[in-house]
Image 1 (cartoon, rainbow, N blue to C red):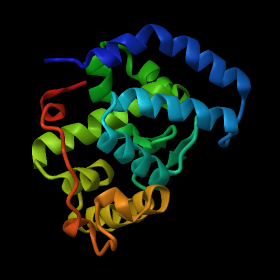
Image 2 (spheres, rainbow, N blue to C red; image 1 turned 180 degrees about the vertical axis):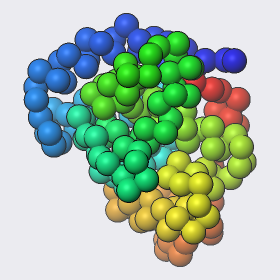
Image 3 (tube, rainbow, N blue to C red; image 1 turned 90 degrees about the vertical axis):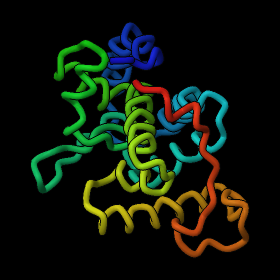
Length: 191
């Protein structure tokens, strides 16, 4: 199994960041947390504007924060700024070779680990579906109806943050009608 080197590089930093975030004791977004999250998103995107915008769209839709742990009705939890579902903890744990409890803690308290995990989930969906908007939907749910609602909402968030030109169109009708470039090299990467 190929592991994205970015996740491996984050391992030594994660425990330090967890302790710093935990010491701050904040339960909601702050200017400092938002600035840190912006750095993490920019770093995760690696200079690919389409991926950076995608991560912002997911983040704006999810509206999480450093330290977030939100219970879902199905017994899972949405963790951290990009609300990575706890159902991913076992898989991420296997990928980075760390205990699930530690990975869960990183997802909650380490914004860069959270963003990298979200990127991996999205790019994994893109590899499987070969469709940008389907991958956005898969990030949220395996249920097609929920995916459609989510895609539309993310599209609205992207327009709100970046303007209608984010899709090179003046008007946004639906996610299915929006041409958005994908970098096929990203489809070959895994975390």
